[in-house]
Length: 143
Image 1 (tube, rainbow, N blue to C red):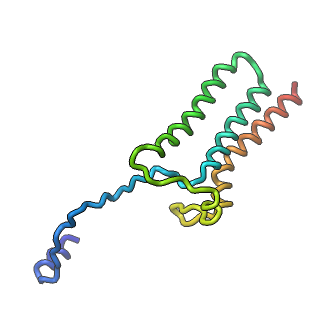
Image 2: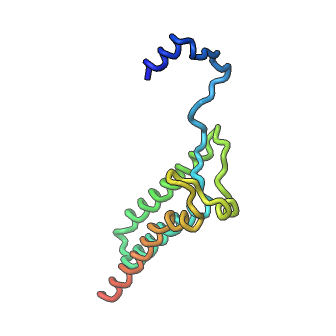
Image 3: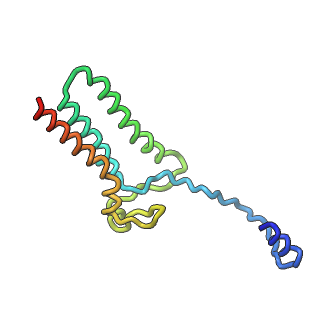
């Protein structure tokens, strides 16, 4: 590649320009995740719902401290990114539900419809709740 540039300069075909006065940074300060806040709330609700189901099905005083630790971890997993999006210099806002329903979301592989994005975001939390219900039912039948 450098040989081509040197050849262009030697032939006089290269054009030398001044450096721009303002430097544009390649990294924009966009700390937003692009999804509406309601999807994150539904995800947290499903995770906490799983803990409520399992905690009530296997109610034991010994599980109080591990359940409290897990609730604190889930809160931290969602609170830290929420605080990250509110740092100074972040000028973007999360999409509203109307914008999300109209435009969907852009991913690395192309635009994703709102229905498909919602399914991808909520499939694991919903399956976790269903699994918790199944385990609670099995434990109730066996007991």
